[in-house]
Length: 559
Image (cartoon, rainbow, N blue to C red):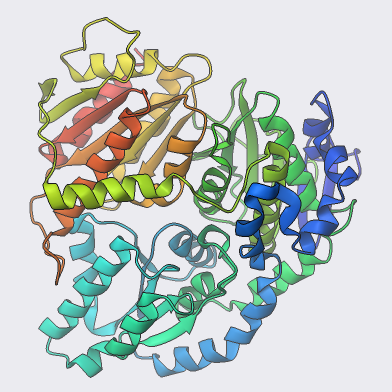
């Protein structure tokens, strides 16, 4: 490790083209060195040896079947001939749609965006977004249906909708089956369904959890079909892997120790900021990895994806600022007026493995199992119940220019009256954040047609001075949703829903996409409100008019 001429105080630690700047200083600022404690327990060597005892006896059984990511790049190579054959067989189908949730979709999205390939990611239940995807080049579409368990309700709904669309377009069942590639674990119910459909099947590594699956079939299949040379990603990961068992020149250890040291000494929010040097969207992937892996048992690291270095929320007294990119020379500082605590730069395949390794290491420091997700099923169970019983009857607290507001206060100590207007409701929500709280914005909308909604995140961060996250529902339920429920109970929640103008049936099911989306939103706010935390739901009775009005109200909070 060298201290001279580096990007940040605290030196640079690198291998295989991947460099982590600033980690030594972060670790040194803690009362006791997390890195020294990890080395004393021989954690690097034990982790690359897949020792399931690293996270304690309660985590051992889960860890024993979830450490395949450590060297899954080797098994990934075994897929390369199959992927080449598949791509040749489907050469006439040049519109690749990925139906998957959480880690099953986020890694391929990063890969294809970074490497300039086209991929339509369908990770929503919004009927408008689903309908638009199906209407786009259907005759040239191959649908990659990706689900580790094989029972993911969103992905099954997408499969059903596309299957019906192909039949409605005049294809026979045999012809329709050719338009599907199924990625799932061996023995999952989806594998049986794929056989019935006549779909192509690629079996994934069963010893890798979904959020660690970037370099398994879940990441490789859709990326390869979209035209990515995925062997390069495997090469980059393998080159880094040789450094991960050692005590020095180990960027994964440096990053993991710094994340853990910061989280246990008051900086338990991590701002993830692209430095603009060639990796597009890695923050969204790292967000689900970190949040779902660490947010449980009342502890955790809250990742906050920040749009650029100049956006509000990139810094703060309880925030560890981390920039990432594909290459940044020593001595260079990302623009936008911030100086990060950590900078992680290097090739994408190495980034995936380094962040997975670092998250597992941070789990050792925090004393949690980074491979389970004990609270994810809660909202799913609520959704299933509401689909059967119907949505709860809720009365709006206020109506303001096409936006209905519903309060679920969750704060018995507050007795002040609930505001009767949008601006007042937003101000009350922000005023309740306190010194250690955060705000999570959760938008159950169309992330393309309603994309401007995401502008509320920097606006609310600027108005509050606190960390603000933004997630599209139900996509975030498979990532940060675990942290919301299992992590420190310091969150406040702004849920945004919208009227559905043109619903879409889920073939073979007694509900539509709109009903499923509404049930998911209702089930999640029920789970959050039960934890005694404030939840404000804003329902857009007219999306086109409501989104600009909401953005105007957010801008007004700063005046």
